[in-house]
Image (cartoon, rainbow, N blue to C red; front, side, top):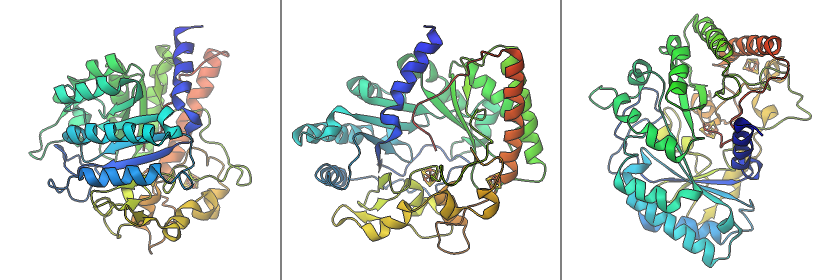
Length: 401
Ligand code: SF4
Ligand code: SF4
């Protein structure tokens, strides 16, 4: 068994219950040190912090309603804003979760993770490190770093406009020492597309082998962006193959399963899980996912699905449980010859739809997906010619959206 096989096997273990888990997201704070240009937060209210009593009530509700929350496993996610700004609160909530799962003799006690996506600025902080060490075997942490200093600092900036790259990159070695198989999320929008190839290569050079790369879901694309994107991916494909990196370095833009037609009879799933996921805000309101909270919506009102006092409102939840590819897609998408891997964000669709529907699939990324698929095909054809017995690195961790 090669080192890579071991990694892959470990990673598959990390996929954990084949991804069939309950994800519960506590929006512990709306504050963040950064003002990233692509951030979906409409406004940041620095004073909005979750009260411990709200978190407690949420945990109690979830753990005493096994009839509603039937999944065998749970991911307790802490999000913001920047979650590590509230590390003391998170530590208190985590202790309470563990204590209550044990007290209830809940199946989740043996099958839980604490999950974080952080801007990385406080990663070295003593209290954060203490928390990590305390919960080490149950933690997943993704630090978001976008690529080269130029690319990162174009988007991930402080309120005074200064880039955050230098402060984040300092914490990468410690993070990778603690979580060698960790992934980072790299997001690309129109302006930074020309920096795509060098950004992915740069992240790999920092030792981050798993890159969950994605495009923003919003309607930001300019004429010609699809061509820039495609060319960047050709360059990246050549770089990977010329340097024989395909079996160890992962970038989610290249996927064997992407770009195929999809049979609606056998594959009709929504690609993400609003409604199966549950987010709770500082007031104890439940949402199908974090992007349905008021501060994440530019044009529409929040969509709650209950609260800590009255529980889940099944009538409000039901529309989310009926989301699938068929109910959201136009005919062109259902019959599309390259449909697989063409993703959408239900919350963004809701925010940009003509009415209050959650079923109007946005088509902003159509051209971009088709460009990706051309490069994807190029990569795998070239790889096949190079080596018939190729193995491509697979990241099997939690999906990051
Ligand atoms: S958005 Fe475009 S590429 Fe995606 S499935 Fe629909 S038609 Fe195909
Ligand atoms: S893709 Fe959008 S709707 Fe789906 S889980 Fe992520 S933020 Fe929510």
